[in-house]
Each structure stands twice: as structure tokens, then as C-alpha cells.
Amino acid sequence: MPAINPERVLSDLRTLATFGAYKTGVHRPTLSAPDIAAREWFAQRMTEAKLDASIDGIANILGRSRAPGRKALAGSHLESQNHAGWLDGPLGCVYALEAARAISEDPVTADLGVDVVVFCDEEGHFGSFLGSRSFIGRVEESDIDAARDATDGRPMRAALTAAGWAGRPRHVIDRARYAAFFEAHIEQGDTLESARLRIGVVTAIVAIWQYRLTVTGEQNHAGTTSMARRRDAGLALVQLLGAIDRRFPQICGERTVWTTGRIALDPGAKSIIPGKAEALFQLRDADPKVLDRLDAELNALVRDADERGRCKVALERLSASRPALMDEALQAALDRAAERHAPGAHIRMPSGAGHDTQWLAPLLPSAMLFVPSIGGISHHWTENTSDEDIVLGAQVFTDAIADVLRA
Ligand SMILES: [Zn+2]
Image (cartoon, protein in one colour):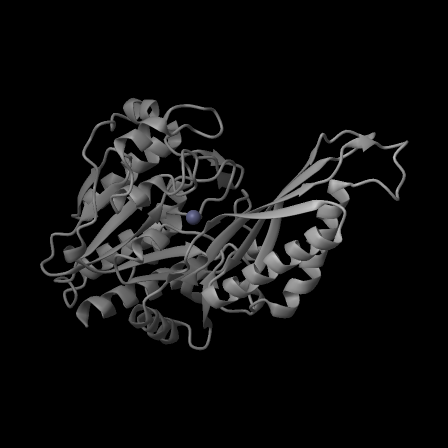
């Protein structure tokens, strides 16, 4: 199996961390000056690896291998959340680049090709997965025109123009070219670390079902309206959320999570009984059967609250994505590579976070590898992974790609 170069992996990652360095992490929003510089630097590294590299009209970077035959496609993203960690994204980009380098440098595998892709804006500064969705042909020029940076309102078009990339043709996936897509990522949770495991093989990227709960009561005076006759929408909403939280553990899956991301009371003043209350409620699971079951129960709880309480309660489902299932044969290749280099220290697990892979998976057999996040911390500047785990993950990732390409 092709051997990776550990020093090269670590030094590339440390160099990337200098673009927009912030404490021990990075502040590198999409198309900020450090992000543009990081992309140019990475494209240069691709060229040095003898990949035909180009940055396209939405700042995606594709480095094409010159090897014959069907290739693997591998990559992730380079930008960060605001004031966040150094590995979320770059780890997967450097692993992909190292796999391309190590496989082409080993005479035994030199005829196998790995294309490296860096998607733009996975972190959603300008939109939702604009880079990976562009790559699968699902972003129009008008979408780019409409996109604004959520932090400062800057138009994406202006940012692309400043970088010199606006109007360039965009890379679009050539499905016939690829046997598989691979993305590596830090876990961003503590499943691996708390079980003293070193490699996660992702089974599926969870689906996210998003709801709005709306409670309508009666706005009235907080002092003169008796407890017996008031219709407090805020109280009814909180009671309903409590009922959901008591019921769901009895019927959820092993890794189901639910979140009330926002509660708004109207009018939201200290001496007024809220006449209206609204919550954004979200479910995540990788199993559609579990989601269907929880959805039915949520509807039943809302119906019950509506019929028995003093307020009107309504539920609206805003969105319901499908889980992205990872390819079984690719998971098995990652299992085998992990077992070779870290016997007994790997596990299959779903991803609770969204990743670019979820957009590729319907088009190409896809796989994801996780390495541990120290303390389970991510989207924070203290995010980190040990050097040993970084190096191990790169080797497992490269082995699995070579294995799949040779099969
Ligand atoms: Zn990420």
C-alpha cells in the first residue's frame, strides 16, 4: 500500500492554519483575503503534485490527475466558520492531496488516479453548500448573484470579482470519470475519543427535519388577567416542548437528536401575557423509519396540546431531507484499512453534521472517514486532533482509496 508522508501532511495543515490565524485556530470566512490566499496556495500544491489544477467561477478548486482509467475523487472545504478551528475542512483537503501524491509516487500504484476537489462555502457564509451544489449542477448564476455574506452583507459576486474568479466556467462533475468519492473530516463530537477509538467509518449523514411550532393564545394584561382565564401562548409552548422531551426518549433511535433552536414570544414584554409563541424545532437521525415515527408522535403531541389546552397549537414541517447513505463496499475498504493500521480501534458511525459528501452521495458511491476531535470540540478555535491521529487517518484514507481503485 502507498505510504503517506507524515511530515508533509502535518506541515501542509500547519501552513494552511497560518492563513487567517486566530489564537490556536483560524478566522477564514469564505472569500475573505486569507481564504483567497489559502485557495491559491492549495491550487499551487496541487500543481506541484502534478495535478491539473484550476479554481472555477464559484471558487471551487479541482485538481485533475493525469493517470489513465477511472479515478477516485476526494476532497473537502478550506474556509472556516468565524473564529473557529484549523482542521474543520482543511484536514479532508490535505488528506485528499496526500492520497493523490502518495498513490502517484508509489510505483505499484502510480497508474491509479485521484482527483482532488476543494468545495467553496461548505460553512455556509453565503448560502447552503454552494460549492458542492454547484459541482453537481444545482447552482445557477442567479443564485450566485443573490448570495450575500451572512456576517457583513457583501455580495458573493463582488467577492468573486475581487478574487479574480467571477465569470469563470464552473467545474461540474463528470460521473463517468469517477469510481468513488471520499471525504475525510474531524468527527466534531466525542464518540471516538470517549470510546478510545481512532477512526470512524461513516455509515450515513443524518437527515435533518425542521419544524415550526406556533401557539396562539390571547395577549392580555399580566396583572389583571386571572390565572383561570388567561391563555398564555408562551407557557403552552414550553409545556409542549417539555412533553416532547419526555416522550421522545421512549421511541427515538440510539443517536437521534432534537433541538429547539429558537423560541420567540409575541410581544415579548415583561407585563404582557404572550398572545403568540413560536419555536423552531429540529430532528436529526440517519434512519428514515425513526424520523417517520418521531414525526407521527410530534403530530400527535401537537394535536393533543391543541385539543386539551387553552391555546391553538399548529405544527408546520419546513423541510425534511433524506439521509445520505454511504456506499457499503467503500465502508468495507475503510474498515479494512483501519484494521490494518489501528486494529480494533475503529467503528462505524453516522455523521450528525452535514458535509459536502451528502450532495455527492446520490451521484457517486461515497464514503467518509472521521478522526477524533479532542474533547469533542469543533466550530471553536480550540478545535484539535492529535498529530498521531492526523497521521493515522491520512494513511487509512490513502489505503482505502488505493484499494478501491485497484478493485
Ligand atoms: Zn467541515
